[in-house]
Length: 119
Image (cartoon, rainbow, N blue to C red):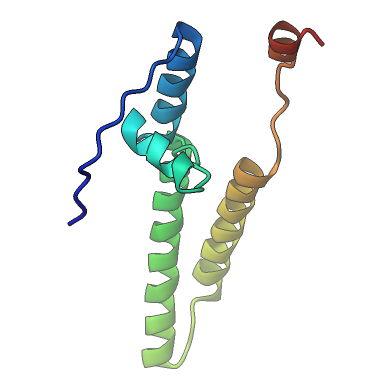
């Protein structure tokens, strides 16, 4: 267990405090943990959305179905091609959805740049 013996006081203005609070909430950790992550050179990532967990649950169900089909095919010496292809199609569909959610950038509102930096 790590012991932290050094206490630090940090003074922030309202804007800095608000930014720290929002950032730590997005990551899903307390402000102190968020600051420690930054100090240690870790780039905190936002916690996944509820959609992510729903997709992962669906992928697990599809994977379980595929495993059951494979077990039956192995023990009986044949496979239900229709059931296997349907589950493989579902799996590919959800993988595509996850890829889009994770990798395709969303259009952002650049108004904050104007306000923040006068651009």
